[in-house]
Image 1 (cartoon, helix red, strand yellow):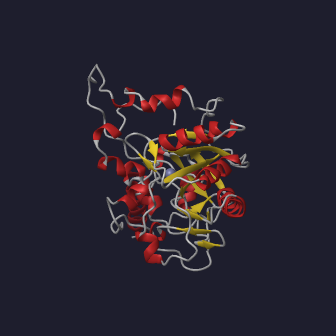
Image 2 (cartoon, protein in one colour):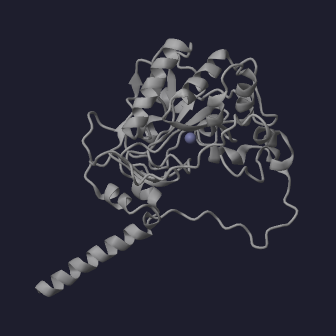
Image 3 (cartoon, helix red, strand yellow):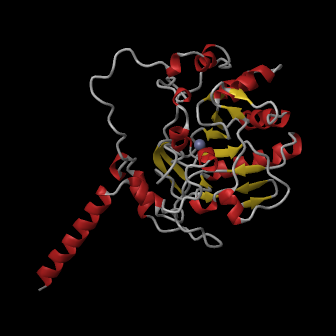
Length: 339
Ligand SMILES: [Zn+2]
């Protein structure tokens, strides 16, 4: 009898382990509503990793508001949270930018997401809307429904001159000025405007990288933090200001030209990331106990009730998803070697 029981228990565990290994990592991480009760560490690469000991960006602060709370993505490495609070305070005090509207950061334990981003997996990426915070507090509902304002027309890659202000310039420059910032992704039209506007020291411009889909927000990425030996750094950005040839590429026909030699085999669909494809430490992150957090967090986002699917509001937050809505010439067929 005991033997049968033991075999039964073994089979139960074996099938549970198998279920875990055949479940895409995005489901495993997307269903964890709370951070792992571990010391803060970023494991792996920005687009393939996870986060131990995540900290929440408070949904309200003196100079910021977190948006899209239903997604439960206002989590990051404590260094990212500290950086965003610093940026919010500095921008309000010195740059005439009244406050930050903070979009996606990471899930409580990082990892791949059910919808939207390929990166944002290790608690070091944050999307900040290029829309100034109003002087009132948004309701939860408004935070789901309000759209960010596009500051650039993606086709010709030109900022809307009636929307762009000196404060936009000052905010992005301020964001890049922090030594912990590795790079900031913005639409090519924004990079061009920054290049034209900077009349002094241009060193910070090397951190500003043009990439499509960033017409409403900037994507800030921090360097691997001290103490995260398992964090895989990204290549350094080129040493020049990036305002020359690299930027001109976006204004040439090259990104939109059809390849002369058609690929021999059709492109493979992107493979689902499984737990085994993440750093080994991510297993521990996934199985660790919840860290108790004051107040109840929003339920883990299930992917079923995404508000305003396909709208401008969504495209502001999920660049990849918005590409399908764009006319063909706006989607580069070839991509620059580096972001
Ligand atoms: Zn982003």
